[in-house]
Image 1 (spheres, rainbow, N blue to C red):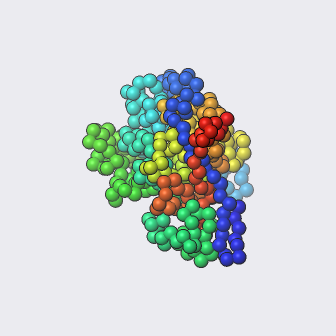
Image 2 (image 1 turned 90 degrees about the vertical axis):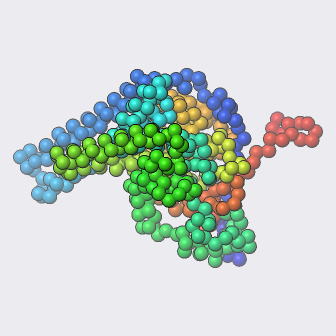
Length: 439
């Protein structure tokens, strides 16, 4: 809730985020032991299922396409046949891309060694799946592991790192017109922020579309939205990149080789069958996969409710809990929410659990996540975000503009310089009479 007083100062009634003080052991002990078991056979069945659904979708689209013919069906206008074919193959692209994202998730699980008990099997399957989707498997696996180790850390996290006030060229903090927590801002400063950061609805839509379609390759190729301390030109294909250490050299080369094979395969397919076939059968679903990947991961780690930490207050549990679970496509109804969770193996719905223990396979994550949330209940931290979809991307991009240059626990501020949340620390001390306060 916001209010503007007689002096033109806008004041926000902020929510409080209780900075958690909990150990890794406490978090892991809440999860049933059998949830940590990994099965190569069971994981492989999910790969087979995703491929079967994609193959069935292709066969269905091909069959329907064969029926869109004047000899079979009469449509009111010649252009209707082209429109009908476009509709069929657009639906194919959507569904193939959604279940292709499921394959991407399983490849990602291989990188976390949660596909099976065997590291060799994990890395072999992961390399095949991710290379087939244009992903440099080991290169991304290495930086993604760093992301998990330092989630929400302002100088160590690898991706979705907030821009600071100074990085955006905004005026220095002025205590007379605003406070560092973002609970009050003067009218003239609000206008100044808006002139620098504000988006029209059309601009926000275009920014969202650009981010969803180009965000993933931009990160892999140029570290877009990644760590600002990395030098310009940092990418996932250079063995000398500061993202990697010397012993990662051959793994990066194997990753590059996988992507070269991918490009060679696509080029040969285009040469043999033509661009249109490759575009409708592979490139459209591929763009959908990239779209879902960015939408899911961005919304897991970006929201006005979530804190980011600087070194003095960062711990692994705090970073792991600075993410949100969201029902993918839940804003489209219960059926689409179920389909979204099923197709993408619950990666959006069980993401907090995934950060607490990334070796838990997705088919055990539902039970493990429910147990973990029972442990987290009452800690005063948000765990459930709004459903993941285009509407939420639009909202979050508009509300999450920058964080302050100072402060060990910071929250996003919007284009008016206001923040929804402020941090508080749990008082676990005892009274001077020796009586524990929480009993």
